[in-house]
Image (tube, rainbow, N blue to C red; front, side, top):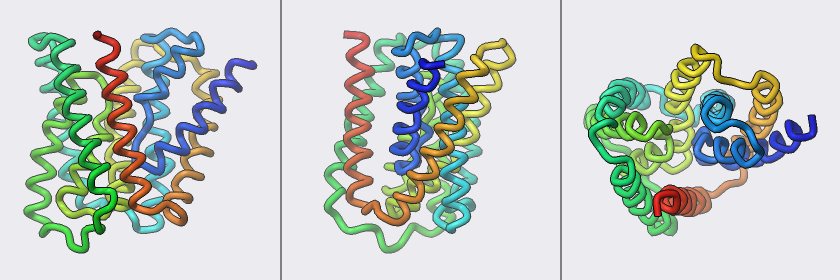
Amino acid sequence: MGIYLGVSVVILALAFIFSMLGLGGAMLYIPVFKWFGFNFKTVAIPTGLFLNGITATSAAIYYIKNKMADIKGAIPMVITSFLGAPVGAYFTKFVPTSTLIILFAIGMVAAGSRMLFSAGQAEPTQMMPYKKRAIITGVASFFIGMIAGLLGIGGGFLFVPMMIAVGYPTKKAAATSAFIVIFSSFSGFFAHVAEGHFDFKLLIFTSIAVIIGSQIGARVMKEKMKAKWIKQAFGVLLILVAIKLVWKIL
């Protein structure tokens, strides 16, 4: 019982942080489960995907109620990222994993650096017209879906910089990203459940922690967080995760 309580405390803290950034959190949930001794393939990955969806869902519900998320604008991104994911999964066998990770890490560092650089700049005051925005984000989301399919991870951390680039204010981008992340997370989880891969007790304990942490995080983001702080936190997170990915193959 002690190990479940311990891991739940850590997950609660991570959910608090990730919900403010519009992310599910699987990129850190999964390593945490591994560090606590849970099997990486049969427990850590499926549980991380499930919590990824719970974190995003819990935060998205709050954001939608408070009219912070752009559901209409998210639809093209949801659809095309779903189409891109299986394409990326297919091409995985043709691309060396180490090469893929290095290229992916370079992209993350570039995106993170851009977020840090833009942290002190004024927030966008006007978004692109809907049709133009839908085309740009739809095409870009297809490739984000491909990346997710290639690496077996969620693409949520790439949606926020993309949406800011087309004129979304930072908070609206984070809130909308939370909505988009829901779908890919649960589809991945149910694929694992079909194989019988999960720890039910861990799922219950950490799900409660995630719901609490993400609801608190969503409220803090809406009421207390400044756009500058969100950009800085997001930029640092992208760079740190990139370093972690490359460190594994060096």
